[in-house]
Length: 265
Image (tube, rainbow, N blue to C red; front, top):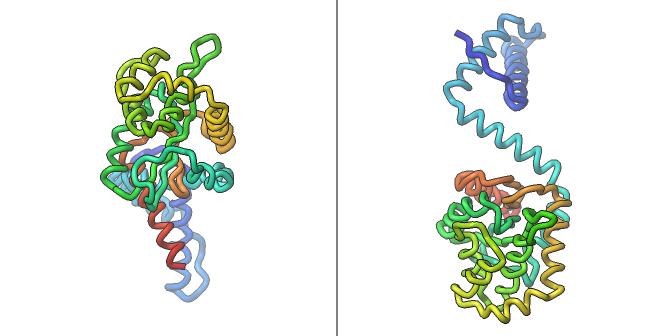
């Protein structure tokens, strides 16, 4: 019995490619002009492909992910190329993981973003298990609302100020692991709990350079096309949202493979 599936653009393209190849092979086999594939032959081919797709959905999902990746990079790739040097190698930016890693992950995040916090353990599991990843967290405080305390912005400023005390790593982990909703008071309590001089922290938070760094990250993120958090740039790949360990690892492996191909050429 033929399975009824809604045809995704990727699958439609696969069907067309297979049908075209089938006609091409028929021409070569007969070494003579061949008529187009008949409606009956087309129906049989589509039935076989549809049944195969139903039995092997992971192949379809992989094709869809690749189609989405290419679509995203077609839109965002030129801007990523424009800003990559700054995003990956800004001298004053905190770097987690292996500072000399061969793959860089740029993460746009907000400390108040629940998805960012829930995804953080998987992200750090990948960084730790791989051992050769540079993670560059970029402050992207989106969740502040007019008329409410700018807690996301305060947390971002505090984290960058903590970097001046060489405490960004522990403070970042503590904020991302914070179970409740953040408040300005709680930010300073967390800072004190990880050994940060809060008086100095507050003074450093007034730096115009820190505000400029945050504004730059926001402006660049918006210009690239990010409108939510988390968002990741990994080589020639963009991961939008908390898609899990496997999706991040797939992007890292692709970036490493692309680098190897470039080096070989």
